[in-house]
Length: 348
Image 1 (cartoon, rainbow, N blue to C red):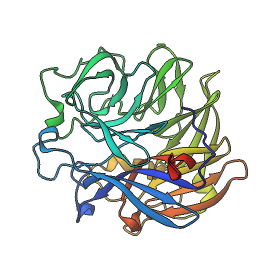
Image 2 (image 1 turned 135 degrees about the vertical axis):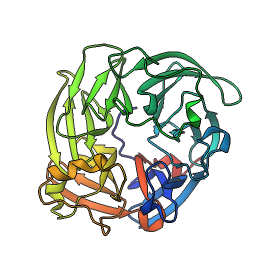
Image 3 (image 1 turned 180 degrees about the vertical axis):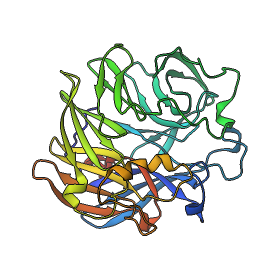
Image 4 (image 1 turned 90 degrees about the horizontal axis):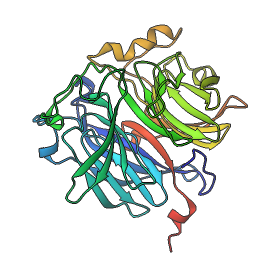
């Protein structure tokens, strides 16, 4: 489950969502009509939708235009573990047959799911500032076996266990907004958006202060973990010392006067070569989400902003290797990037 993968060529599964028509005038809770996963072949310049998803009405807010999209996924072997804001879905690769499903009342604005070696699932319930370990049961149900608040408070301190939070459109503002989970040396970590850090949930007191901007991701490679920040930087931290070792500013590499986009989604081709996701910036009623633009000298957000895309960077040479526009094919926001392996292309 480490970050690097070199086989399979330049092919990737990209996980995200498709906007509704007129989404430029909608807030983030209404702007997306369905979850979408595509396969991108960079060398061939091809794009293929492999699956799409619209959540059942009984597991989303009672709003005809509630947003539906896939958030960050985890690939392990021939399984892709994905999530919408209120569900966990498991797909078999490479045919994308759905082989698992889970939805619990605590699921609100779920941002990431990953399996454990124990056969359980770790789920980030971002809307409740909560991480849950869940034993899947039959018929889309599950048993919570452990849970952690990502803040200095007891789980459920600010929330009511009797409420079905799948039916609540949003619980914002969030106290922390955790968005990604990773494991290292048997310890569980959560990337925390508002605190600009990663916090160890299983060993209280351990923390990686990212600091420069609000982060996403948390890709472990050996003794290091890689993060993105919303303003287009890659942060590399040491797991031995729990501190940042290096920051690479992708804006400086690209040299654009426009903001690169909402930076989120990361895959390591090698320790020095990464594939990063960018989602087009769009007007938002929650302008605090774009406050980082004020601190990026020379960057601006306009209706003609750069499109949603994936891009490869060589961090050692500090060069842009290639880009692939996914928006022109129908994917408007992306959350995670995963390798298409050689065995996916030539299944037995």
